[in-house]
Amino acid sequence: MRKYVVFIKSDESKVIPKESVTHSLIKDMKKKGFRKHHVEVNAENEREAIDKLNKNSEDYLNSLREFSGDIFICSACVIIISLVYIFSQ
Image 1: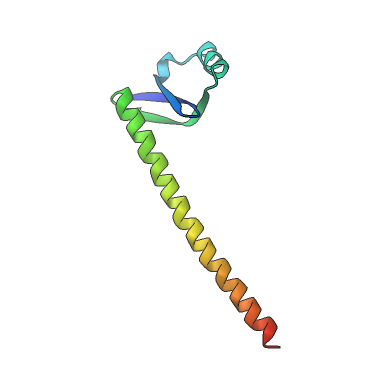
Image 2: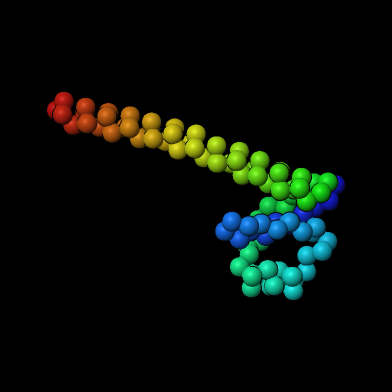
């Protein structure tokens, strides 16, 4: 397996083998509007690297969605308990 570095621009991404990434390439990509993604991907080829990155991002968003839902429920309970306490006095 090879390590790939991902560069992201709003709706476009480029996957480059890590051994090919140089300081000048990073500068060039920044000039073109890309930013280096913080995650490096181990994969057999570029297509697999993109698929793994998409899967990782999808899992992260699902976790965040579940966490947000849990926080909302807890916040609602705290507000209800506070209102009950305030009005029962």
